[in-house]
Length: 142
Image (cartoon, rainbow, N blue to C red; front, side, top):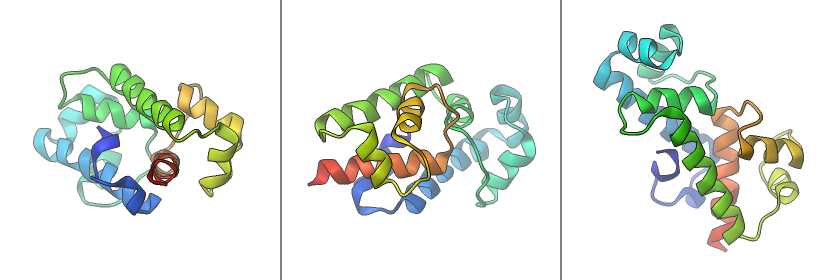
């Protein structure tokens, strides 16, 4: 799962976290093949081949969870819920509200959009997830 792709997310930049997410996805693609992962996840095979080649492509959290679910005991929806739950718990531990989180991510999104992302009501990219994940981890490292 993405929340544990690196040991100390606070010590990594958002770009490094996104790269770690993409490596985890590439591992699934390498293990099962792009065609199989595309068929099971619904993600376009060309985008999966791009990831397998070590290049970035814009995926949503839901698409990424569908890829990870190919190689997991959980379905994509459950994995996305667990990820969001972990992020929300991190916000609680760090006493962090969505407006502060939006300000600390360097993303051009509002607190309301952060909240919608955390609730799964907004398409959230891996780049946005990485920035949110890192900001929460940094706050909890203080």
